[in-house]
Length: 146
Ligand SMILES: [Zn+2]
Image 1 (cartoon, rainbow, N blue to C red):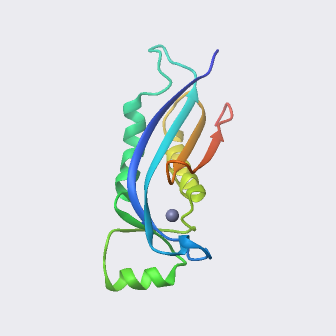
Image 2 (tube, rainbow, N blue to C red; image 1 turned 120 degrees about the vertical axis):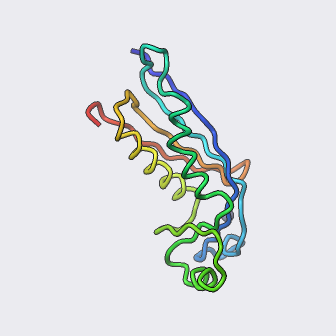
């Protein structure tokens, strides 16, 4: 059986900083992020790997949670103190907010959701663009019995 790949793209605006960084990335700044969710599997009797609507149902709530938020790593005491006295939309995460880690975070959420439903998905790939020209990509390959 041939494998087929489908993809859906998402966009959001988000602030972050990398406190360990010695260059510009330690400053408060933001990006217009975009993300490609690619799913590979066998087509079903309707000719679909997965309904695009179902991909959106899984991914859009996470994107909405991040949109116009500041993604703050739990170890960033400077920003934690700032947001404590100036409440704004923040999402706390236990990792440095690099594109690599954001892609892995997204992959974890999406694979958890997929694992809860029967599907013929063989592989999930997430590509997070921090700018038009830079991205990080992670993937998980499912074994036959998941
Ligand atoms: Zn950045």
